[in-house]
Every structure is written in structure tokens, then in C-alpha cells.
Length: 189
Image 1 (cartoon, one colour):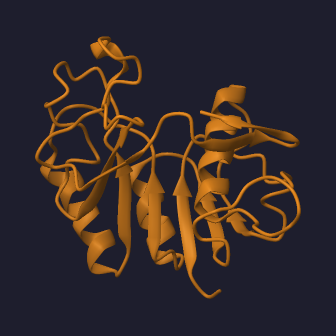
Image 2 (cartoon, one colour; image 1 turned 120 degrees about the vertical axis):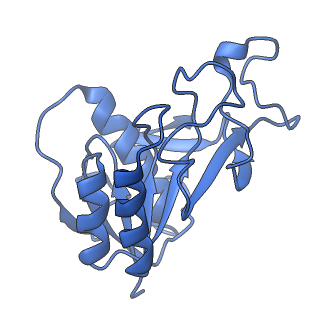
């Protein structure tokens, strides 16, 4: 109950029934397309939404609190120094390494915070190519697999695959899992 999970994403519907009494801070600026809100909300609920409340779905860190912010490396620093022990970053910043950003990641890590990043397809070409921030040292990189251990969401369509390279630490179910993106809406994604 004393663990704060940070989520760096587009934005969040903090009035969602699964996020009530869970959010201790939200510094994401208002505005942006609805897809920013729906993705961020789904990620936050999966990380630490309410559980055993008689509605919706179960969450991984159901006893944890959430600190929310928009996407970016400065935001990772802010979350870490704000007390988050784990930060989810389900976004990419590109396909190129930056020594400066590696130093930012190292600072977050040395502050006692673990960054979990999605090894998603960032138009980096081949699925074996590196995508960042997932490929930085001291980042726990997660890619998705389907029910048949398939990296492609649509078998045979390389455009629907996520990265699977030497920097990926974990493959987890990522297709057709239970999510909620807005109040009263429960589905799979």
C-alpha cells in the first residue's frame, strides 16, 4: 500500500471508476486527442486500478497508488524524485541511441526506480531492431505475444509485430487482454 507506481503516458481519465482514490498526482496537461486519454487510462488501470470493487477488472498492483504524468524523459525524472518506485513508459522516442538520455535513465535507476518500457513497433524497420526507451540499459523491456507465442498480432503481417530483440527482458500476453479505456467501457485490446 505504500508503493507508488508512476505512469508516463498521453493523459488519463482520472474520474474512471477503477481509478477513484488511486491517483495521488496527475501532472499531464489537459487536452490532446481522446486516444491519449484512452491509452493512458488503460495502462494506469492495468498497473494499479481498483480490484474487488464489484465492477470491471483486476489489476496487477491493486494496493498501490498512482502518480501520473505525460510522456517524456524529464517526466521519468519527476516521477522518480516524486517517490515512484516503478514507472511504466508505454511509448517510444525513436530508433536511435542517445548517451544523454542513457544518463537520464541511469539517474532514475540510481534513485531507486525501475523503468518498465514497451518494446513496441516504432517503425524501426525489422522487429529485431532496437527501439527506445526500451533498449536503454537499466530499463526493463517488455514485448507482447499472442496465445500461440506469436509476436505478430495478425499472423503473417509483419506490420503488426512488436520488437523482439536482445534488449527485451520479458514477453507477456499483449493481444486481446482485458482493458478499460473510459468509464463503464470494458473490452479487450
